[in-house]
Image 1 (tube, one colour):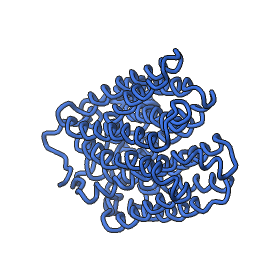
Image 2: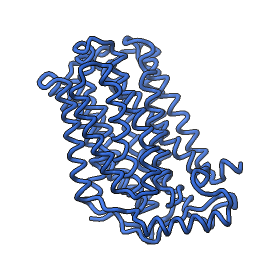
Image 3: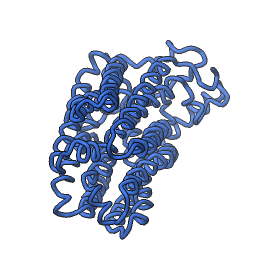
Length: 436
């Protein structure tokens, strides 16, 4: 099976230069879009699973880590924040590099560094050693995420890209289903170090699969064609290259809509061990089961999105997902501040998280479709940097009120949801940010 562009697929608004105002810089798309084969898609899904496995697998072991390393819960959460910050920085490194040097070798180098740093985290003797290693792990792990999206942008666009990204996230969505279940089941057997060794094993699997299945989708000829197109565009529109080519309300709005929506999920992920285990009183296995069920709902919604995008379009599905996410986030805040039974959070949080399956693939495809092909890697890097920078910021915020309240979680989720919706509305305009 291949996910290929269909002649009948409607382009997204940003891919129709004729519909754009004069101030809009139209994307320069390659004529060669061979589609995404099943082995390549599965490999990219494995690479997309690096982040959720690196964050979700060891979440059930947070209390165990704070005890064994003789540190605070906040310090343990900083190991999560370090990974997220590293992942954001790494996207800005590997994305532009892959535009200039090709996709394959930067990907392989990043995965080798990820494997080495993952082994280091599993052997870290203290929290002071673990946190910087997690930073390096995040930087190197970003290679798979940012280059994976760029590969899809190289080989498809429009609704075909939205479908490929939704399918990739559906397959990759198995990670947050499996990770907490594995973590809760194995934490007492192999400990948190054993869990981090599993992350290293995932890195090895991604490296081997990339060597075998990921081709060079941005070879010297492709780079030369894009450079020529860039030069021609720069002659017609001075200063339109590089970052300026991405300075449209379409790209910025869609990127920030994705990033703030992701922030709502990251707030949930960061707070979930303490909300479910310490506030509601669930056991570690019960926490892993509930967390996994929520992730399964997210994966199922991603699968539904992949089927419906050809009928309803990415923008409509994105709008529905953002509205439902806002409703669930508001319900979570309401439960937190009114003092109603805290177990109701087990109902409100899935309402907020599951519809993100309509958001992630479609928002990513719409944002990348607004990025000219010559800077697909840079566009993917900015998308990922915004995603993980915001995630790194919200992770410590949800614990500011202490372990006995979910109010900070609700406030962060509602704020991020509102901003995501606002940015979606901004992204419906196609004028340049730099030109007003």
